[in-house]
View: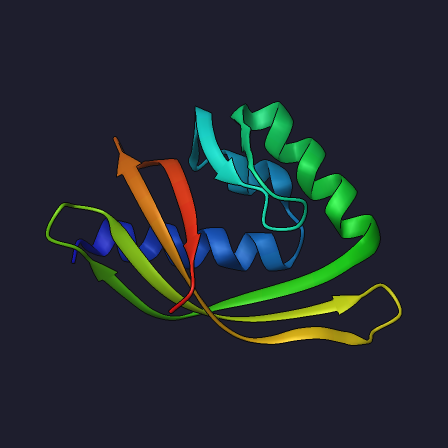
Length: 117
């Protein structure tokens, strides 16, 4: 596993958890293909990711913590994540493990997929 990938993934999760959209977007390709885990489907590009997260964070308070980071044989990066999602009042909506699978090129996130572990 490349140390660059490890650092990239850890930084992106850290910045997401403190809601620093601009910093996270710096690590994404401008045409990133990103899952809309809240409403379904995908969003594409920085503007759609920003819009999605802005809407989501008005309703939900997700916190995602990488537990393990591994590179697959086909060059993707699999991240086992502990995901805690609360509503804006602090009620827990979900608490468990998910798998995020990243396609990375030129040290930028090109695509992310959500899978059940």
